[in-house]
Length: 287
Ligand code: FEC
Image (cartoon, rainbow, N blue to C red; front, side, top):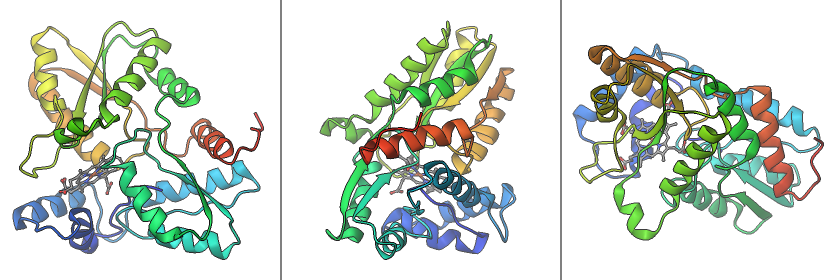
């Protein structure tokens, strides 16, 4: 399962409505979102969902004997379409794996709700709730930051701060991934910040990366390498929020700014996903 992305510019209003779940959208926010997609070069076709399809196909090849279906939280094919495909293929057990490593009731919890509703008890569900400390994933990220002279900033999507009142593990899991990667890569200088906060009128988890870059600059840091641990693919939050907004902020500050390549459909990453699926199915791993 993946977040999903509008396939063409004309889809953005429906996509945004889906994200808002029926709550009103201020027209200027919709205009701003359309503009961000336009500036990423999306008019009639998006490369973003294509990455998910590439990952799906590679995972299916890697698993050899397990069909893999894509279900998007906010776009098509929907999670219900994936379930329909799996049931039609005769599945009696469905593994739910989200292309987002950290659990939050507001994130993975939403994928789970859609999946359970679509399954309606017609097959057994083995949901991978989180895989933030999966050794292969930690290794893969560690390899991308090892040996850098820059200060490494780990990032993830922010969420409304109220999640902490309910004991949500999201923030702790993010910090755990960051610590594991930093340790594995023997990093000397690193920190964590959130990104991509939405203007919903309530406080979100911080610090936000834009403020954090200022703070790092004041502390004398001159170069940062961003390692987004909460995302696994190139999409709007990477290509706009980091590559455009955060990079622009860094430039204003005179701060060197780079980010790691995202895992996307990297064969090493696909092997990690395959290991998670096999474990969920309790089938011994090939490797
Ligand atoms: O490339 C693309 O087209 C899609 C990029 C995309 C990813 C993504 C991941 C996460 N989100 C999470 C939480 C929230 C919450 C709200 C929210 C709003 C948006 C909007 C867009 C958007 N998100 Fe997203 N998110 C992506 C895109 N997200 C577009 C709406 C416009 C805006 O705010 O900029 C607020 C909802 C509301 O208003 O009620 C909350 C979380 C993740 C990471 C986990 C995952 O990937 O599922 C958490 C990718």
